[in-house]
Image (cartoon, rainbow, N blue to C red):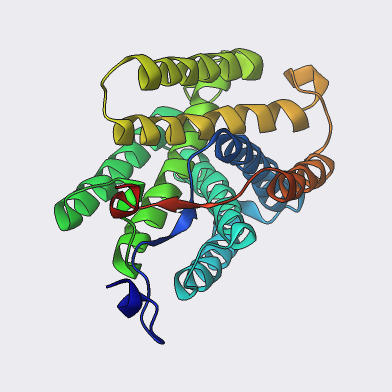
Length: 265
């Protein structure tokens, strides 16, 4: 069987195109979500293109990145993280469009996106029988994976804005307290991972969702003016710093493809 997998034209289905879930993965993930917040706001707000046009631009970039990712046969770190950044920027503008342009406020936008995320996970599970990242062995499952990630990134943006914002029925907790709340939630998930028997797949997706609002609140903290409780770095400057940090992490931190269950035996 091993020889058959290596024959020309046959794809080794055990070769994962997504990275192993390590500490380095989560460091880059949080930085990517923060970049998505600052870059998304830079295009839609600083460049005055609006949420609808900004969403269209980033969805187009996301589709192009997905096409490239699905077409390759093995894990490419820069390509994978480029798609992640594309989902975060698209998620930022899509969430802002739902919250503001549609006029349903932060609770309405968060609820809508939560339903879409649950639907994506439900259809994925119904079709494949699992939502574990270890089962990504075909373009079909990969599309489920990326669709779910896009919705989780969008939900995270809306949830972060709902917690921090005081307008549009937001809770008004501010960016600092919002970041602390989501960081505490991630700490609970980490503890559950090591000390309970809760499904690691469930914990992975819970952490993936919570890192998005953490990144969103940190991004807002970086670029918002001092009067609004931010650090006033500016969206373009903050985005450049974050992009450089992500590239450095990809080059320095170990990047390896994840393993499928049959490889772990």
